Amino acid sequence: MNAPKPISPFRLCSLLRLQKDPNLALNLFQNPNPDACSKKPFRYTILSYDLLISKLGRAKMFNEMEQILLQLKNDVRLAPNEIIFCNVIKFYGRARLPDHALKVFDEMPTYRCQRTVKSVNSLLDALLNCRRFDKMREVFVGMEKYASPDSCTYNVLIHACCVNGCMDDAWVVFEEMRRKGLKSNAVTFATLIKRFCADLKIKEAFKLKEDMVRFFGLSPNAYAYSSLIKGLCGVGEVNLAFELKEEMVKNNIKVDSAIYSTLISGLFKAGRKDEVSGVLEEMRINGCKLDTITYNVMINGFCKLKDFEAAYRILEEMADTGCKPDIISYNSIIGGLCKDGKWSDANDLFQDMPRRGCIPDVVSHRMLFDGICSGLEFKEAALILDEMIFKGYVPHSASINRFVDGLCQEGNINLLSRVLKSLGKGNVVDRDLWTMVISKICKEEKLSIVLDLVDTLVGLN
Image 1 (cartoon, helix red, strand yellow):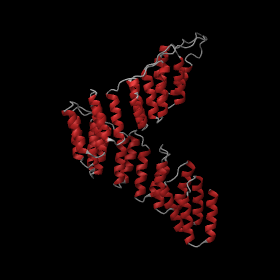
Image 2 (cartoon, helix red, strand yellow; image 1 turned 90 degrees about the vertical axis):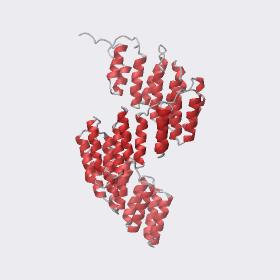
Image 3 (cartoon, one colour; image 1 turned 135 degrees about the vertical axis):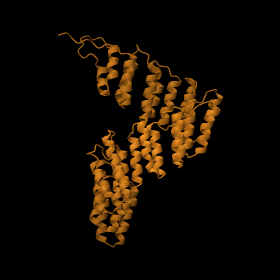
Image 4 (cartoon, rainbow, N blue to C red; image 1 turned 135 degrees about the horizontal axis):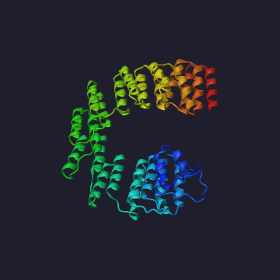
């Protein structure tokens, strides 16, 4: 039987590109020819490194990614492309690891790769994702050593100012950009428009939209339209929001599910839920598939109207159409039911979530705990509390205080003692809670009970 043909560097790249599992891709990269008799080292290419590093970075397998980077550093035959390091910096930014991003940027020359404005911009964007505005300033001030800032650099800085709520600084950066002869683009204006809309300064946002067309010859992009539509819905101007959507269609800008979801949310808030079906029909006609966000908006809307039957129908429709409900879908209904005093129904859904393929999170537990406490069902609340502590969750401190206060007023000392022990396991019994319990019981002048509780509380500390 003939031995299998060895995998070539070109073939390895093809196989890495096809492999979806990052662990299998890593194994393939590390041992491309397991049956080969030759001890000659495999000659990896820059593309093979790039493909694997990207797969590992997307999977947040950073230890493995760093091993491959070290191998690349030691492979002196190759001079890596800057885009490899831009991607690595981006992965660290998304994972909120700013120090790792800075380290990679600083070490790029040791990989035989020069830093340009591209990697600087990637680093600035990663630091923005991590909200490290101080480091952004340092990098920008020192970037002249590597490159001159471009329009993308200033767009990132403007975005940082907007995120930080410093609109005056954003305009200073905007003017500096113009003084340096760098052209603003649609992204620049969309970023500023988004901040205005977030602050509900709708008039200012629309003036900026007009200025970018009149004075800069730029057309608003989908990002700008999305912010404007969201802002209009936020101030109750739903009709104007729909007019803006029609303007998008007229200008051949795709109206996606996120914009339709915003419009649907606006209709619910305006008390116009009967018009939602028309929007859904338009989505279907235009081939815009309903996604989880769209369904969640409708679930939330119906829950606020206390139409829980409709919310449940949406939940079932999601499953029927292959759009799996997520934790937000269930939490919206659980939260709505609890606010309406239907904690038993909320508990039924909570208990059924694992069967439906969604595990309750800390928010699910906290909402149900608050709902059951509001219904004065303290024994049920104690069971949920035990489950939370076991899973490493704790209620909000205000919820704990209300719960313990209710137990004190009810006079169920046995349950109170059990709850305090459970809270002790979660390390959430503080001085204020201690003081409240003792003072409440002392008012009842039951010395033996007080002494028992003191023993319990002392045992927790």
